[in-house]
Amino acid sequence: MFFFLLNLALTDLGCICTTVPKAMHNSLWDTRNISYDGCAAQVFFLMFFITAELSLLTVMCYDRYVSICKSLHYRTLLGSRACAHLAAATWASGFLTALLHTANTFSLPLCQGNALGQFFCEIPHILKLSCSHSYLRKFGASVFTTSLALGCFLFIVFSYVQIFRAVLRIPSEQGRHKAFSTCLPHLAVVSLFLSTAVFAYLKPSSISSPSLDLSLSVLYSVEPPALNHLIYSLRNQELKGAPRKLMTLYFQKH
Image (tube, rainbow, N blue to C red; front, side, top):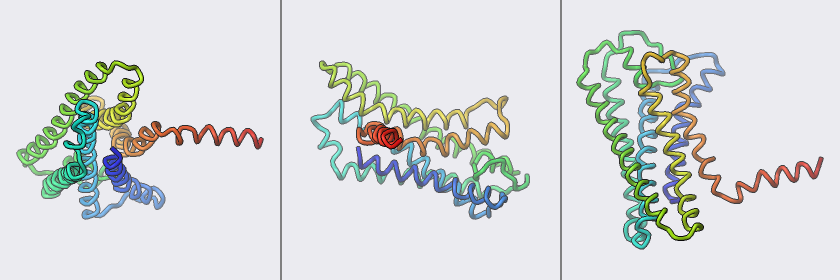
């Protein structure tokens, strides 16, 4: 679990570093400029880290499933080599998806201006600037990404159904609580990640507006990576006790 958490931390850090530093630079220097190559790089790395994170959350769900439903076979099914292979597969899926979308998006000619109503380069807003009628390529890339996301989502749902059925069969209340405590942080992270992304991309066009689109882009690209570490750290008793100690010391001094 901690090996996968390390990879999750790397994807979260990558998501933040892809968008926030450039946005802060533009805000401080009162500019909105970004080069064409810089925009392409931003799209590539954002798709890379977001897809890798979705794949990694799916792998972590499999890890929870094996540890609870097939605990006696955990070492066999998820040894160090298997974990390394699964982690490599998540990064490879991110790379291939990012390469596909970046090549597909930036091979289209742009003729509707060069202004994006976002704080980073986002594919839907770039496609609005295109004058190409290559609907087949756009549709193919969308189907690939939707199939990948839907497959991950269905696998997570199926796994958690099996996990909850197994947990409810545990006779002791302490055992059930321990099993639930290992799953709830992951379930919270998955829910936060998928709900913000789905609402950002599948919201009705009737409620779309520049300010709402901007807010939703911040919501799915910045908030989940920033909150993931907080969610998982809540299981650490030392971290939970640190604020109490600080407050106690503060009141003792004053």
